[in-house]
Image (cartoon, rainbow, N blue to C red; front, side, top):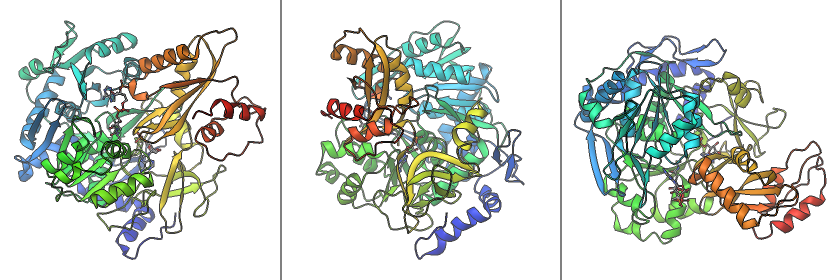
Length: 633
Ligand code: COA
Ligand code: AMP
């Protein structure tokens, strides 16, 4: 795309360099990190023909995030502040202490036979040990796959089966506000459901719950680690995998987004300068969960690669204990930049519309608020700006990219913001808006948001174990492009507006979920003939899933009974975070003549938006029927 922004040329120059001379640009940016062996050839192609960055460089991400800073005199600086209102704990861990803990835990994993290339699944709540386990894997060159603690056993099982881990690391429980949730029964159930069995599980026993260990397979974290010898970082190739993170696609099978070591470290380090404008020693807080990409990139890796202090927050924006929780953490730990999902601030606004809690805290150190994970809706934008007076940075990114694709590049220059826009493409990302046939659209025309290849360092080089799916999902629709799955437009000033997904992925309270997967689960119920699950707008959570179900002939079940059973089924298979609470029985679903359910029209009807009756519709009368039945919404 042509960038036409601002009067200050620094962003413009940097951006154009990154696009017009991308290899030289990223060769130079490689110097942001301390390689064991500097890469000479920044970009190459692998045997599959996929672009790869820094294949001939050697590094270790755990060394860069830990030992390197100790060697630079940061040993006594806090690396992690663990702030857990749910257990009433605040604990600080310095870079020296964290290095020691990670080296010991890496030694513990080594004692269980874990070595370079082996997979380790991590199913943990928001405790520092989750980061220790990730960094310990990185130290050995083992590939971690963190699974969000809110996922049900079935979801965990699918991931275990795909990643085939040698070891699983977990904890005895998680804590959701005031509910203690034992993890071990979930883990045991998942392993039972999975064809693949790990050799060992390492369990962190938390004081709230003592998990029962299975002899021979399960080991106690503390006991195992106390006997272990510290392990040194292993030299890895830039293209060696660091982690797999599963994310929702359009089918029931999640996609294992793979991340490699070299591109990831360079891109994250670069983003901390360019997008977040932070420096070593700053306190940086991403209020997310290690189970999501935000947690991987901006709770663990980027702040530590930069020598910042990161916060691991085990709490919620509200109810732990009140809507002042975020402000309290920012004030107490001198946070410079805070990052969360808009839904979290919508929850704060709901409980404290006048932001009375904000007045109780000294937020003089807080410079900017970052928002991502879903669209920053203008009402939330205006509320936050009015109440905090802080600059807000709405930035757009995905699990696949691992770092922001579009943002206000505050480290280069602070641009004027436009509510509803994630501002401009971050250097490295060459964005076009395309129509269905792949033609470039002009400004202000809405279409598919696509990124020209090669993607910059840090983005997924492939899907774990399924390069065909990588090609099919992202590369084939528009040759020469990565298709983001989002729709949007670029305005006359070069500002990007992301308007929502063009596929069956929805965003519920900042959590990415697949309606396709929910449909598969709903359809498995004995009474259901067919169904559609669509995302409908919700004031708090952005979107919520709504099931429309057609019953099999002769089924006499009451609506309430069906709904209860379907809600239970989705909770059991995906987890409570799916927030699937409503299923409506309808007579028929609108379809095209070839039998495709018209989900987009359904969505528009439910959200009260204008819609065009597609020319391919089989029977337009169904739309009126459906409108009547959906009237309560
Ligand atoms: N482990 C177990 N269960 C979890 C969980 C976890 N880690 N996270 C959420 N859940 C459960 C909740 O307890 C709840 O269960 P319930 O239906 O039995 O009450 C359900 O999943 C839905 O949770 P959630 O969507 O979080 O709703 P909520 O009403 O509890 O909280 C928000 C609403 C907006 C406060 C909360 O979703 C939030 O903080 N969102 C921000 C998310 C975020 O940071 N995303 C990362 C992108 S940057
Ligand atoms: P995830 O992979 O979980 O990070 O979710 C990525 C998806 O969240 C994107 O494809 C978008 O649909 C949505 N998203 C993330 N950030 C933004 C943003 N700033 N504006 C609009 N949508 C966003």
